[in-house]
Image (tube, rainbow, N blue to C red; front, side, top):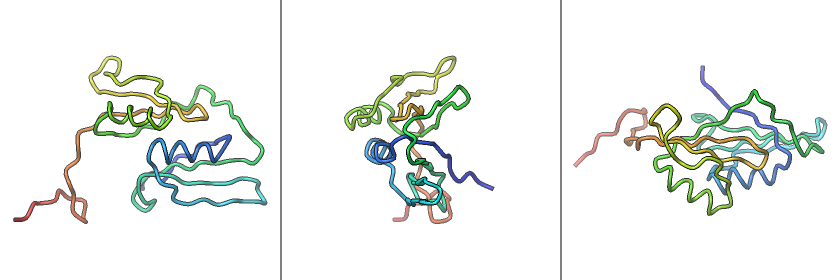
Length: 143
């Protein structure tokens, strides 16, 4: 079993696609209109759906705003350089709502970005990952 996607309802699909693709650097993987149901689904992510968890953006035609409530927290993305990532997001028009710094009661460096619909995206500083081979094991350098 593995996680496939997280769905977010959005009020303006084009605006959300611009944010996730242009600001956060994701790729639009697929998009489909469902005229009978009056909605459109768009899937975005950093890799193909066969091996990566992605985000499903659901646009219900004619609905331009949602009450996010208090139950949903955030989506988290790992970044190798959180300060550079925040600078890049800012330069691309993204909104940083918590500047990089240690999390409360801990040492992990985090920041928060807000998407156009108000969903929060946590950025977490992670150590660079070593290269892996086609089997997902650490790659061994050859001379």
